[in-house]
Length: 523
Ligand code: NOJ
Image 1 (cartoon, rainbow, N blue to C red):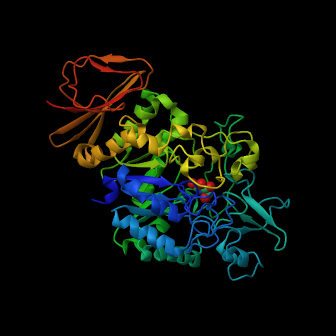
Image 2 (tube, helix red, strand yellow):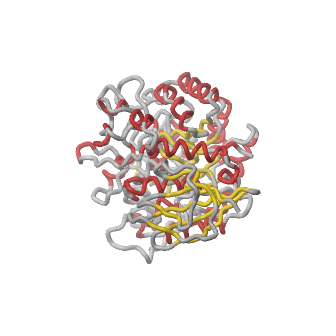
Image 3 (cartoon, rainbow, N blue to C red):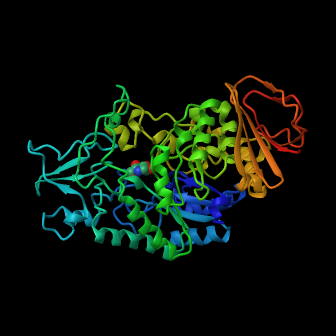
């Protein structure tokens, strides 16, 4: 069984994890220094958002060299050191593979745009203007406006699904495929354990460049990107062949983990499994209203849609979405943690969520995210969830000795690793305890899932393996609850306040406000 089926992946946003060289931005040496922490916490691997040379217009997702390290983060030597240190601690390292686009400063694009006859012209997606001189079709950029950028000197438009500084590669071109597969080989040769594949559903677009249709459900005030349904600009059927090739290249290195990033409706995720992606991220909990009924529906539908060979996974936060503590409210963060870490499948834990870190309001003059700058006023900016990790109660939360690139949360003096580590009832210790329980209890690690009940306040489900059965009971409300459960026999293995371990699970089962329980049932 792959390591990733047993473990939890810790998502590090390198700019914000730990700054070892004191310039206000996190780096590889900083991550290496904090591997002991990752090991202590009990995660199985780390996934690093991009660390490659980049103009940093999209903070590393605009890559100008796929096979080197940005000097802000360090050098290839630092990377090799980090990898060796991680492996020494039995921690896996996943990199972010960004195949859909490069930076407009990448030598490939610089060459591509020199002339229509450039040998690399077809490495990107160039089109003539529409008859009226405008963009070739109506496709939108995720980050606002048209997905087409006019290039004056060669008289054509190029495609960019994200920023105009992120031109899309033409994956229909075999040389592009070869070059990008070589990027995977480069990192696999160095020993990385897998990749999170950025924007995987966008690699291929409609080969006839048909217009995207209007979205009948669009409501004014929403992100204007959703005015159209991206029917032709992403998730094309031919993509499977490319993904199979990626899997094949990786297959020569054992079985590195391949995770796909795709914000697609659940049924559309299945073909990604079938094309060899170990799992496409499941972002449903990021988007679902926080109440027991809706959460249950999402879990049950997901479980029902997956075939036995499709491994589930769960995400509560990442660098593109509001943090879970801000979405569900501080009172519910422990319940959310128990949910994330007891559902069936691999969980991804975003750095700082284990402390209950919240989104940090960013004043207009400190905004960094280009999305916020392009589409202001809709709250699309991602800086709030990317703020520095809170290590201590000292200056800048112990993240850096310089001015940090994004402000540190106001609550850092109380909410930080150092203080929570010594508090036996802290959110941090809740995560640690859950990670250890999960790793030692087969029913939690790979047992079956069955939902038991959901009403306006409570969600309950069970995990079962052989003779072992765990019940998870989550109080989503701010009121205490007593649940009549005459048949229930068992013992509380964990309560989200970490103070009921070993207590018999009595009838009625009482839960405090915002409390979750993990019960080992005895028949
Ligand atoms: C998804 C990444 O997670 C996001 O941060 C980035 O801006 C876009 N893809 C473009 O690479």
